[in-house]
Amino acid sequence: MLPRRSSLTGLAVGLFAVYVAHTCWVMYGIVHTRPCLAAARDADGNDGCIRPYLARRPKLQLSVYTTTRSNIGTENNIDLVLNVENFDVESKFERTVNVSVPKKTRNNGTLYAYIFLHHAGILPWRDGKQVHIVSPLTTYMVPKPEEINLLTGESVTQQIEAEKKQTYALDEPVSHWRTRLTLNVMVEDFVFDGSSLPADVHRYMKMIQLDKTVHYLPILFIDQLSNRVKDLMIINRSTTELPLTVSYDKISLGKLRFWIHMQDAVYSLQQFGFSEKDADEVKGIFVDTNLYFLALTFFVAAFHLLFDFLAFKNDISFWKKKKSMIGMSTKAVLWRCFSTVIIFLFLLDEQTSLLVLIPAGVGAVIELWKVKKALKMTIDWNGLMPAVKFGAFTESEKKTEEYDTQAMKYLSYLLYPLCIGGAFYSLLNIKYKSWYSWLINSFVNGVYAFGFLFMLPQLFVNYKMKSVAHLPWKAFTYKAFNTFIDDIFAFIITMPTSHRLACFRDDVVFLVYLYQRWLYPVDKSRVNEYGESYEEKPKRKPHKE
Image (cartoon, rainbow, N blue to C red; front, side, top):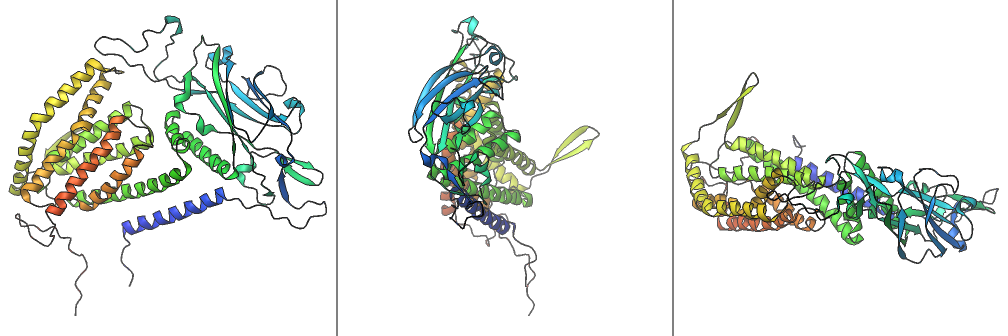
């Protein structure tokens, strides 16, 4: 007989398994391209295969031009910034050149780089077998606000000459210079099947007919993932020249196809509203990580999403059914809510990646809902004016609250002086964008440095009651897995150092909870001192004989 309803957890795990299997299949199709197998030729002598022009070993030349126009037809109004004669596609190189910045570009205009790969000794626009690609050397981004000492008003850039300064509105995007241009050429002598050309590579291919055989010209590619925010420079109106580092390396077909898909993914994120900085975090995962470690990161990230979902689902389910606060530390719930909201505001103030910001925001909303449940709050509306009411606590709940208050009393002697002292120290020695930034940083430093102390009231309540049956252990288990996964992400995704250290601090907290779990074994069938049992009774009706 089929079950009346499917398990949401089982459904999530099943969908996760299908997603991972599908992703592995897609990745295999990307890195493994089926070659053309020579077949019978048609009436024109064509066998349907597309062969590499590089197999003929032509003498090539690499030329890089700059212009303010997105389309060029002749050699007018363009500047040659790099010319590599006798270009060897197998040889890696890196060169830094100075590029003249036109007045139009200095006034928030765009400057383009045209990269030509053509036969040696022939101008690009006179070579019928040349390939070229275009890339903007400028991008628009809101500059980072200047930080100052809030007491003295001294800024970091006060020593800069006045004529070199340029003031922008805080929310006005300005033109930034890309200091790096990374080029690749696909060097494999790979023969494509003309009837099943990969769509990702096809748009980079230019084909010609030589005798009775179709050839594809060298595939020139610009690695946009290497353009990082840390390499950008603000273009001032007084700047006439800027450095550009042009680097070249060969690339395999599998990596080329993978890189094309990753660049398309980053572009899609930007179309969905991700800023340049947000997209940069994703680029860092691909560029700064070994490919094997990148594959591991993908699987770790997939499991992180799964455990996040299961933890949220079980946590919400636990608190939704929660009718009593017996054995639960109200102070710990309030603190978790406060700390989560503060961390979210801090990450927002630091313009952290959306990869970190969105989960933090969801967590803050859930913690606010938990506070409403813990305090038994109800909100009645009298027109536009809300009236908040708090429910009454039972004698058993008051006993738990007594243990909770006792633990907080001892903690306050240590915690408050440390937080206040740290806030004044940072005010005197560290520069901030505003008073709001200092306030949020002071709160969040207290949360990160001493936040684990606020877990002690719950540990103290567990100790007094000699029980941990009242805790949401399913959610704790999934969160424990995610905590160790966060340790890996702490070295991959850019985030404030304090947030990174907090990931490791959480490991200690969960280990203490696990120790209490071992110290006070949960017997869910046992009725505790409050006359309650935490055993989840089956909802099915007993079978009649």
